[in-house]
Amino acid sequence: MTIRKAVIAAAGLGTRMYPITKTIDKAMLPLGRRPAIDYTIRECARAGVDQIAIVVREGSTQVQHYYGCDSDLRALLATRGWEQKAAALDEIASVPELTFIEQSLEQGYGTAIPVQLAREFVGEDSFFYISSDDLLSDEPGSSTLASLAQTAGDGYGIVGQPMVVEDHSRYGVLSIQEVDSSLYLRGIAEKEAPSPDSRGALVNISRYVFPPTFFDTLAMVGTDPGSGEIYLTDGLSAVLNASPDAVRVQPSLGIYFDLGSVDGLVSAINHFSSIEDLSDDSSILSVV
Image: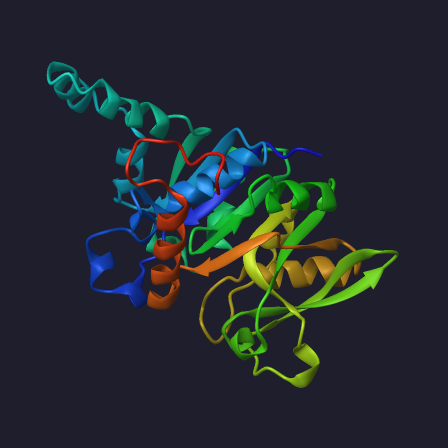
């Protein structure tokens, strides 16, 4: 199964990265010569996606400007005879069709909100949902998202990332059961202290396949009484309560970077700068 639509959540305030994210949206932080979100967009493209909705903070225009046409800049490059530099702008435009959805903080907060806002965009199609905080670099020739689509079929799917036990307390650890060589999600333990039994477990890196019926489930999920947020994982729990075998798990095929932390950002900068040839205008489409 090929999934043609994706929703990328990019409306976070980036408070853990202050003060730089007071001026630059976290999704636009540079990794080499490109913003972080560009790697996620191209990851989607390699999986067969041709329409992407990016949920941005209300009033922010940085992502839109990056992917928009700048006719004045093109005219300037042409008058200077810098056609090769202009070619880089053409490469920027070689992404799937982009739709931008604004998220207001007054609309509520939580990981489920971007999904709910994308209901009209999704329509009756299954779709990928990805958080721009979570970056995945697949090995050349592989695609975790494409594999996830095949694993999920016309149902639900989630990517599980191998992680050292010491880091489990920072993420949601997947409870998984193998049935007839397929992996099924049984639950997600959010940021619990690691235990000897969790060695070899997979963690949630916010890469999902959802069928359109998930919107009805999310509509019935209430806000968390402690945080006042609406959590995506509560929606998944409701799905599992109704159908224990509804969500299949696809192990990650790539290297994970947590862009919500300074250490993760530095690691991502080093990784993507090393695999992208910074000396010319070569494309990264086939190398990450």
